Length: 278
Image 1 (cartoon, rainbow, N blue to C red):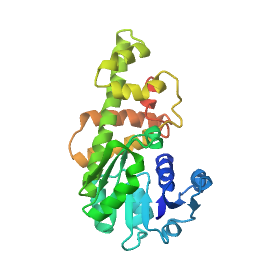
Image 2 (tube, one colour):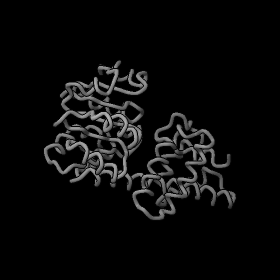
Image 3 (cartoon, rainbow, N blue to C red):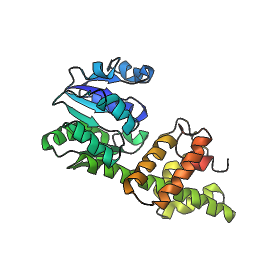
Image 4 (cartoon, helix red, strand yellow):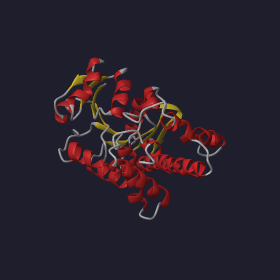
């Protein structure tokens, strides 16, 4: 199929590379240079969103957040009538309902995971729409992104958005847990490596294993896999959606905001561990 792919940031580029293996892809990004690696692999580069979607049979968006979708897509009335729009952008359930109301071909397909799982086709993916036929199209396109048993079809865009927020809530609260574990271990004279080793048999093992290379200085936080800015934005969507206190998430937000103040917003969210004493 002819597919337009809008948004070629870190995650978008990985998703687009998978799509390019089976489809003819035209890409657009606000900063054209960020799309050049995809052009080098055979994608066509468009100079505007309208040019990208011209003649496309499916449109995929991978933008930073709901305001970007409103600016690039909704306000421009960008989606041609009847063309399936697959949106991988992390948005709130309320925004997903808004976009589905505005464009009846909207399919929300947020992905769960970071760059390495994306590269390896091991992400989680929720695909949400009440339209069975469009859901099947989106599931087939998303299949190369997803790990075994990690591709889930649901019957509404809002439900897919909720799934993504639940997944990232787990990241926020377990990141906060590892941060507090490091503080507790330090209080009793344990070094970072010893504390992390003790977390092997706990519920924090997943986060510890994922971020230990950053904590131990084996990897730099820039560019990283999943930025402070992105997880902070997603965490705020969780609080707004819940419409009540989410104390663990709100504690994590404070630490993300501290790293933004220190200039680490565009770096891996493991910055909350690495620069915790700054």
